[in-house]
Structure formats: C-alpha cells, structure tokens
Length: 159
Image 1 (spheres, rainbow, N blue to C red):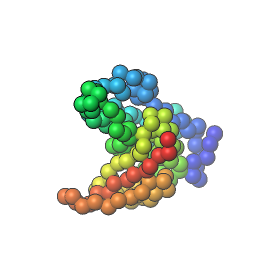
Image 2 (image 1 turned 45 degrees about the vertical axis):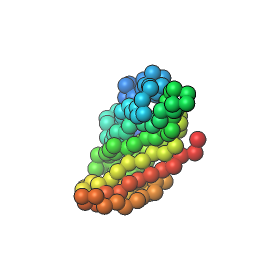
Image 3 (image 1 turned 60 degrees about the vertical axis):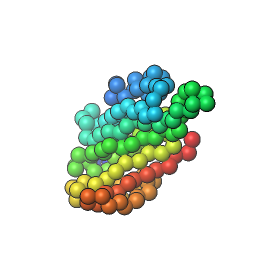
Image 4 (image 1 turned 135 degrees about the vertical axis):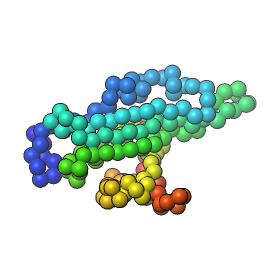
C-alpha cells in the first residue's frame, strides 16, 4: 500500500501501453529518411489496478537533408506532450508527478533534448492548478497569444 495525499490507496503503477513499449525499441521509424518522424506514446497511471490518469505524447525526430553526403542527418529529438489527465479525485496526490517522471525517463532513453507542450487557457479554466503542476515538475512556462491565450511548457533535459 502507498499513501497518495491523505487517502490510503491501493498500489500505484505507471505503465506504457504495449504499442508504446514496442515503439521505443523499434529502430525502423527512428532511421527513416525524411525530415520529420513521430510516434505516439501512451502512459497509464493506475491505482489499485484501475486507470486513474494518462499522458499522451509524441516522440519526435527532426532531420535535415545533407546533399554533401546524400543523406538525412538528425537535428533533434524531443517529446511533445499532447495531453495529461488525472481523474479529479486523484489530483494533488502524486499520480500526475509519477506519470511525468515516467515520461521524463522515456524521453532521456529516447535521447530527447527537451519535453514540451501547449496548454490552452480553456484547459487552465478546467484545471486551475495545471500550470503550477508543470512548474513543480521542472517546466518553464512561456505565455503566448494566438487566438486566445496559450502557454508553452518546456523542460530541458540533460543527456
């Protein structure tokens, strides 16, 4: 048993879905001959065997064509967070942080230079503590204005 917040809960587990696990070990897409490759990643946060949270992200490889050697050279690897969700009754109890720790470990194994994402003002209204959650997990927040407020969250990684 672990303690999440003030409530005694069943064991907590963070896992990749089967497809995401296979993607991390698949060298074919990582060696593609194009300027941009990405694969979808899905992390589940479970408490007592039941899914209570999720992280959806893209693993991205950016390349450029180098005509002097007639091939593509890799410029950067990064992870783009598409969405993070934790059931309301399980927020502020450590589940989101555990999923982000798993994502960061995956990003480092993948060789990513950073993890980033976009948070829209509408999502902040639904989840008021979201920007603080990102800050607490080591992300810098940049405010942008484009057809409504949005924020870019960025965490640089050491490789």
